Image 1: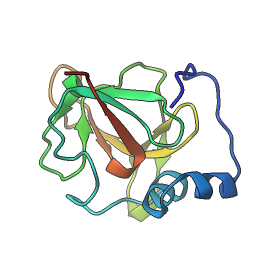
Image 2: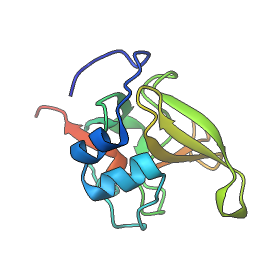
Image 3: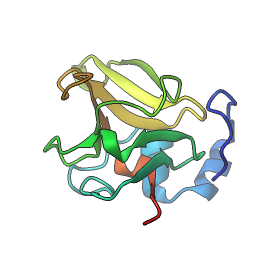
Image 4: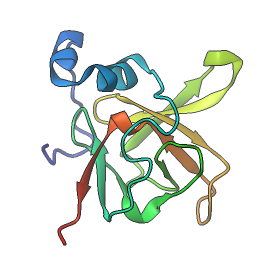
Length: 138
């Protein structure tokens, strides 16, 4: 994956995304699906490392901000940079939530809630299929 700045937008056709991603990754990131709890990758990952967008490689989270939320999805209290993740209102399922997406390629990542730990009080509840984990060198 490249290290293009988050501000540089990545735009691809639906067909290009389908060719690049697995069916699960495509459904989550391009069609805003949600993987079942405790079924996707990374929810129980304990190693130190970097979490990137599976679609474009944009750096999203560091392992130091990951915590066990008990939800079955990878959860973080803070993104790697304020401009790495975008937000928008999600009114699906008769609820009002804050959806998160990759600021570079608009991939659906998950949602952010106000019930996380200190220091931010936020819980970025991510779909594991939207993330690529790069472990730190040991």
